Length: 345
Ligand code: DAH
Image (cartoon, rainbow, N blue to C red):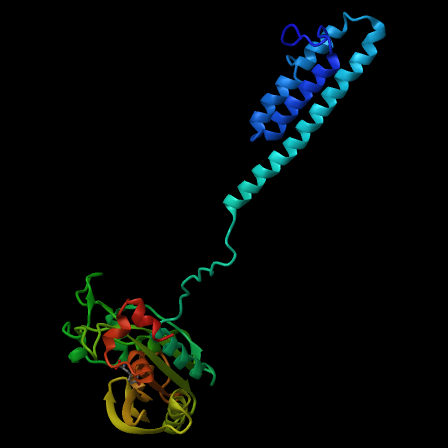
């Protein structure tokens, strides 16, 4: 070879091509990236390669030798481009493999289990209470937490002088024209009136809900707590129906053998009134207030007290949740600490 790229002029063309093929093949096989391989490809069989030069020089060769030399060049080129293709496939699969390795997920890692919400203890007990009444035909209704003086007190026959109306007991909202005209309802009883105003008897409803009183938070009091109210009004309901219904409730809630007793009490919206106590967890517990609906309430809602009779009751949900789950301090129920809440799942 007298100068680089001049193959034809060399004395032993065959050796030269062989030489080129060997050196190129070595470079091809040791190429470490697709980029490096592309450079080698252009230098060995590309437009400015030795092979390309040789092809160009072929034109000036005697026709009888041209065929043989051309063939030799073609074979060399073919073998080199074959080697390049093989190396390219190998390099591509290496690239793919390392990408897979980088992206790989470790299937043996334990999964991350997301925190699951659950109903709060109070909500759960409230639902349980409501479900017992639903199972004997009561409907569930709810009402506003901000109430008027009329529904919270007046229509329930609570006189203007009653201590419950004092701002030391009830939380009033600065709303509307009359001072003390709008309160945060101190009980769920206003829904008795709202419901009867809109529905003719027979009425069988329970009212779960949040209620408010001006109490400081201590182990047995909270300014926010929960009640379930009940009302049954029909044509000939007796105090016996009241006792049977509420005893059934206590037995569903605390167990079939639960004993109950009724003690005389006083509520302006019932006459006669009573407290029901239940023997549960080794002690007598006051569970609820109840009584036969006072005719004065019927008059406020347009029912004829000569034609209908009925009973009403109201119970505190929070205290029942405490009894059920052995919680000794009411404040635990309002503790947002997840460690406290998780104990009641
Ligand atoms: N509203 C009463 C309270 O908050 C509870 C109550 C007692 C409701 C007797 C009633 C009832 O419907 O008949 O203490």
